[in-house]
Image (tube, rainbow, N blue to C red; front, side):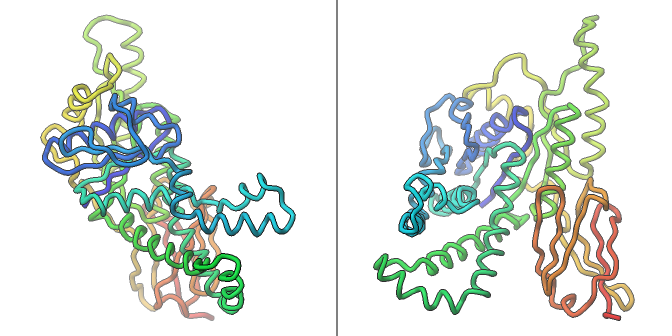
Length: 386
């Protein structure tokens, strides 16, 4: 199975590129599911076909779905949410506030990802193409498996005794339901999901950009955040590229000239990733015929589901008496990185995102002596404590 996720700034054409990729894969005989995780769904509009919260077959080898997050939370987490809400009401919280407070932060992202993973397995799909939300929401979506596993680990470590005392009470309040067992079961699914999303042989992440300054900057930040969590990017789609003007049209000539330095910047800064240029269409791309044409423009004779780049995500090497931990973090300066260490965990923070890294056993007894940015990677030197 292959999972391909398109991300980028709102309005750059993620939905259209996702739909075109899915049609291209389906036409090649691969059982394909295209899914939208954006709350402002537009996948149905792009395909010119009504969609539902469940996958429906819309063409040979092609299924499509727009995830209804609220329905998923009710189905997957409803009994836990009901318990939390009931407990809050017993403490005097009014009904509306209790319902709101019972929604665990990040649960919408978790159930969206689990839905995609479950559909991919149950439907025996060869390819899952994800039309993701704008960049910030997508990075938050992808950070949740890491965050959820971290908090469940902490919960298990520090509250085992308390939870043991609570279980009989919870069974009396909600017979047949063990809240912590449900959390632990969900965590098992999240761990399996995270392994799939991190596996470069299965999952690929493809930023969609246009030759514009703000779009490029956001895509570069997205690349950094994906690298922070270890998600593999294998290509970049550069959409809405203007052709060279065929006549002395001053307006089009100026627009074309404005795009050229940004195009060079995209190819240079995202190297060694392949960059696929997509020409600016003179019409709206809606419906299967036009999407198939777009798929041909993007991929030509290439397989849209192939893996086009693989690089190291994290490595530990020996350097004399010391060890070096290298974490690729392109397009970031050292003064933008904050790090703290607690026991066998290293916390790396960039902007609004933080990742907890569990250190390899060989580094746990050693001291973090120095950190620097070198060749696009965060390099941390570990040595014997003084």
